[in-house]
Length: 118
Image 1 (tube, rainbow, N blue to C red):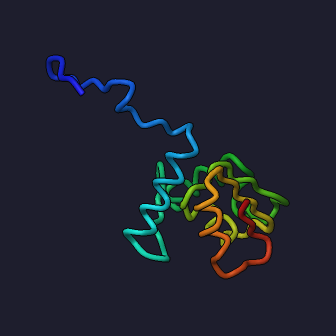
Image 2: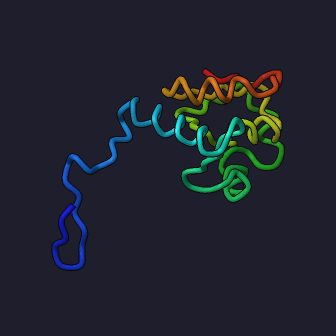
């Protein structure tokens, strides 16, 4: 890494490549080693509670979750978002991630009808 003025620049070799599977496998494996079997929960932007009223206003008002037949969460990572959507009343939630490690961890949780990880 080299400093230029007050801004910091990264070389290509130092940049994190979120598009690579190996990055996610290493990340989730190290989190499990550090934090144990329960692992870590990581929310990229905010919790569902923080955006729930916004979702209600754009998706049909109060009770909209029960009217949604299926919900797909792409790149779920270790987020609680799929569980929270299911708890809010969405009957069928499918959460997908490219990391076999995180999918394996999430799939090992107690089963809930209508909540799947792949």
